[in-house]
Image 1 (cartoon, chains in turn orange, blue):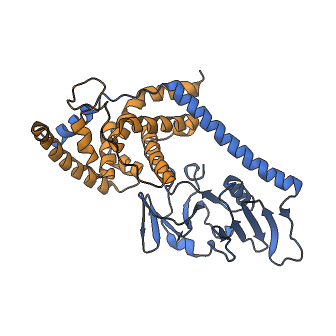
Image 2: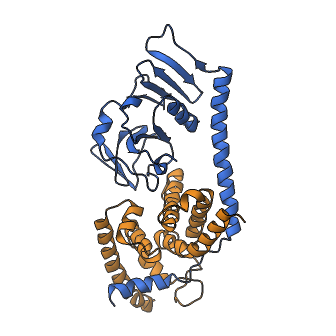
Length: 167
Length: 214
């Protein structure tokens, strides 16, 4: 394994889960996120000499994954509806390897940009400036999106147990 | 629960999600992408070399055609450089665009052409001066082929350190996020773009950096 391959393998090992979680939170579908992140990492592999010099390679991967989703959508020229939560998204939030359905549902109810801001801030630990640069929006917009997202999530997550108890 | 606790809860909620695609599969796909990219480059270069070498579609119009100095024609496009330095580009099909870009570069025009993405590449900075696009550096020419484009480019008017980015979209263009339009100006990721929407042709100036031109 040459130096480039070793460097990429190390990056993939360290970054893949965080990138998956960021894209998962953004698109709301676990398998779609896996496909998009895998494609983005493959592009990073193909352009590793450039990507490794990027100031935030993880953000490059997530941005590429989200752009790929837009590109796939443009190619089909139709809106791809968010599928219902898959079987690997659990309702009790306690099973190993799955994510709480209430959490996914709450995130899905956020506008796309708010979801993306939350994902980049939480899972890639980007600050406001880096998040703004990655998404191509103003720092003030990032702050506003995050505040609105937090307010909505608080409301959704606090009401989720009551909804479940009525079922 | 304060904001930090809420966000921590969300973060922790995703902790079980783990990437299952093996690194070998990523590398295999990466190799495939790289091979495809190199094959496209080779094919584009080969087509141009073949056309130039065989003289097919390439005509030197140095006499008898006022204003036209050289013309290169492929099935998809024609580039005519005039004696005043301006370049007329007729695009009939959205094919062989890398070869078109190479031809324009050979004629001294710092231009990137895309038919795939409205978004600027990551790290690419749009020049926020739409007025610079109104100086005649690029305009629509006459004799538009059906479903195609004719552009007149003046390379000398492209500012130093900047590259003219041309985006071509077949068919009527309907803006979708992250693109917004307002009073004829299309905004993509914070950068100003001017153009028309049927068919979609957009111009913007970007900085002459590797992020913008690679």
